[in-house]
Length: 357
Ligand code: NAD
Image 1: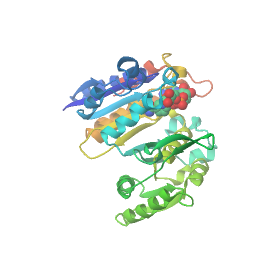
Image 2 (image 1 turned 45 degrees about the horizontal axis):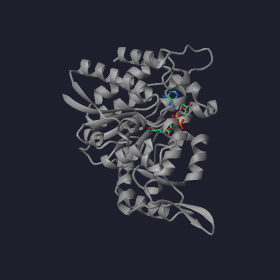
Image 3 (image 1 turned 60 degrees about the horizontal axis):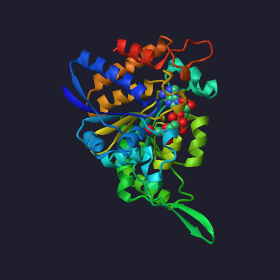
Image 4 (image 1 turned 180 degrees about the vertical axis):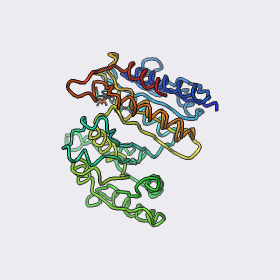
């Protein structure tokens, strides 16, 4: 098969980790007889430097014309002083919106080989962690009106959170569909004791649940969910929640599995349109350019791209198996290494995974 993949290297460690993921994709192409055509799409701080905006129109067009988009990470202190509408993260929000990707799937799965990196109590870690956070991605407070005004001689800042029925319904369907292929349990997370958006959320999710009688549904307030994630993460199969709660909970979820550097994410919209695949971490400016980054999150994101956008299940599995094999053999980047374990760099980790495809 011949497929076009849009490549956003981004800022900080972005170019390093994307470079390793492309090496792995090349190994997959060679083994399975495919041709992947990579089209560069600058975005983030580097695009601000080059083109004055975080997401040039040309980059968005390249992404829309592709079969899937692979992204490293964007942002960094260099661009922190940019006006809010021209910050690197704006490029990301614009890209998600432009692609119409409303569902973000973030797995929290602990690889047995690195269970020692799990910060939870041993008995909790040993019960296993394997769930997916399905986060609504293009609605809620991140996309509502933001304003600062002066009232009674002081500044008052306002961010508006709103959700419509169709936005909730479509993400609920993604969650129930995902659960059908797993352990058939959905936990819907909200703050229905306080927020009107959450009350509508709960009502619509309950309506959608009727279409999936084989999937169990329970509701949980977000504060309780944050606590349950560290107390008993084994209880979760699929968590569905709105944009901001999902942003926070999925970072917590990633940390309990060992390292933020290990987790991929898939952002999906209408079937047939390109999905967006990226690691869940940021551009890690503190370790950029030092060959210290863990490329596994990005490499697993490339596997997700093959699975969800290109329909290449065997190829995706080949990548996931190669990652497991390298971890089982004891290879570690700094973020997942325990005291006394030998630490390898980003390039070496990429090379080892490539070799095992
Ligand atoms: P971060 O995820 O970049 O880093 C948090 C910590 O985790 C750092 O100590 C970092 O070194 C470490 N880390 C992250 N990824 C790692 C990896 N692959 N291997 C090893 N260690 C890793 O979060 P931050 O420091 O809050 O943000 C840095 C920049 O990234 C900011 O400009 C932020 O806006 C941006 N950001 C971008 C995205 C994105 O592009 N999707 C997401 C989050 C943050």
